[in-house]
Image (cartoon, rainbow over all chains, first blue to last red; front, top):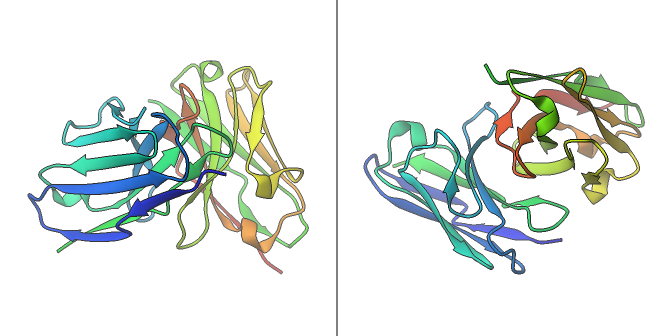
Length: 107
Length: 117
């Protein structure tokens, strides 16, 4: 199975900050990488697929990059509604696997 | 409005069975992959299974193979997860989700499954 490792596991930031979350795959996955946002008690929300393509309706403050084994999610100009847990997911091969999550908290 | 609504969760004893359902509306169900993802209390997301549009190709995480069966009824715009031989470690919120491919895009609100004696 492909292991997905996110860093950091938690992150404190302030409104207006720009933050970057990293996701590393245990083997190459081309660009078969997605990102999700989840708020407490809510279903996940899809943000990005294909490593860098925004899902419809997702604001351009979210951006993704990377290929192979190393990927990043960047969120610019943090707003209160952006504080949540973020997960990466590889879909290059089965079983599909998620990273452990990165909790983004308000400083 | 595009919507997925799960049902069928509840409390079941170890070794028991449950059948989860997911009712889709607001989109052409038969055109989309369907996925089950679960989340144990306080834990991260775990992909469980998915099925392609026509229902012929299904994939499962190893921990549920032989115990869970994903199926879909395109005529009724519904997705199901038959769960047998349930274990305590299957306790989780189960989400159904749809997507143009294996990446879920639209998510339901989830249904809680608790396996306990």
